[in-house]
Image 1 (cartoon, rainbow over the protein chains, first blue to last red):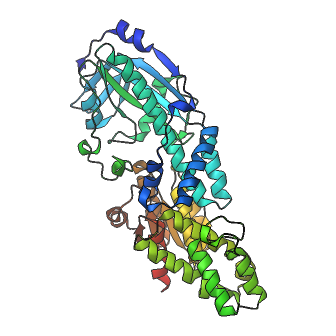
Image 2: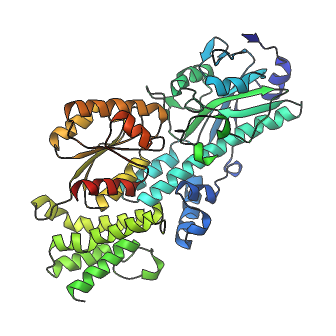
Image 3: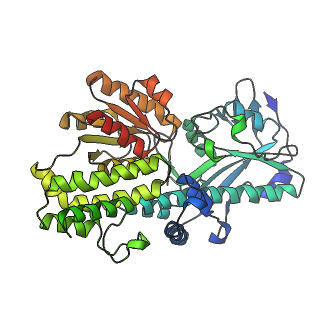
Length: 244
Length: 224
């Protein structure tokens, strides 16, 4: 394994050892096109009724969202490319070949968790239960977009700070994607400790609230985000595949 | 309105998703009676529940399915139509209970163990119910024992299994194997974002669908 040295003081000054970001709803975006895409549609396929329903439900969801985003910084990173593993402190993550190769030039990592809370999810379930399947479906899609938006905010926030010193970040990776087993959530959350935004894990390693994202970002002077993603991944069954 | 006109109007309401008089959709039918009111009127007029079901409701949902397959409509329009269908079905429930009207069959559905995602499963359940099937929804995180228990109570049912995660596809495989071991005759339909036709073959399920209408097409093929 390669030991990776890093400028601990520099990164700590920029990012802190751990942090919960202060988000407001103004930081979040829900593009209507993405909601339509989630229903297999483009804007030209949608009538006025559907578009106004989506707009109305986005407004409602913004009143219910409780965005939270936290991270932990660690410079104790070792990447084992032959075994497709990333060792963080004393925890071995079975990240797989793709994530490991993205981490190989990193001098530190940020482990993060974000959630949009229970409010939006609860509304979706209530709507479904009361027979309003379309509205429940749309609210579920809005919840997913909100969660991605929170993760995107955290990613951009960290990237922006690092740019000032010429460092970059990798794309964000999560257990369950790019051949990184979802069971590694347990290890990831043990590294996050209390910086978990109140997210609980089920025995099968799903996050509650469901509308949550956790993962890892690599940091270094010679890493950057790339606009790939699926070209480098062979997981044909991935549910995110078509979105990229 | 004679009975023929009433059934045609009812079918139109279901096809275009006019749930009841107060429903704002579709705008062209604003203020008009919807599936709810027209079904009641049909029963009051003495039209048999069986004729209402087969002569209007299922016919309408078949048209909705055709339009979906031709990509003339999308999931939202399907769901609105299914909602109108279900509003009509509320009036027919007593006749299903008494046995005067029969559904096409029973469909047990659940999201497999370890998986808590229910949106896709709910959409399939709603559309399948709208297509004239009795749906027994076991919810999420359903293990083999729960599926088998429901099958013992509903031995002629078709079973639908949903999974949203690649990681819970393994659980789907185990549940399919367990059901097939005890009930090789039971038809198993699988679906969910990561699931494929190839996976169906690999695990020995009988049907696969990537969308709710495909599930209806498969189920209807079993009773055709």
